[in-house]
Image (tube, rainbow, N blue to C red):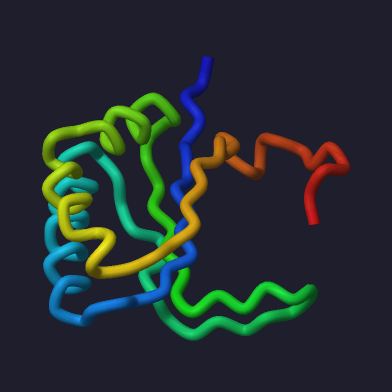
Length: 111
């Protein structure tokens, strides 16, 4: 069976620039340590539908859901969490991805 990637999606609002930089540095190191990689880290946002107006979107890909869960509960990420509340507020979700999208036909649940 093919392992499916997992995606951590965060809608972030910065609170304190200095604390945010500390958080980002610690979080990035812990993400890399657990096999994650940033796909989106800020950047411009263009709302297309609905009333959602995020300020900063972060998307991180992990090899699978279990690896993402292990990272989230890790001592390495705990050091970033120690400054999170000072640095930012956010909504955070973890979603299961699909394997090779060319091999997985849409089943009507997509856009």
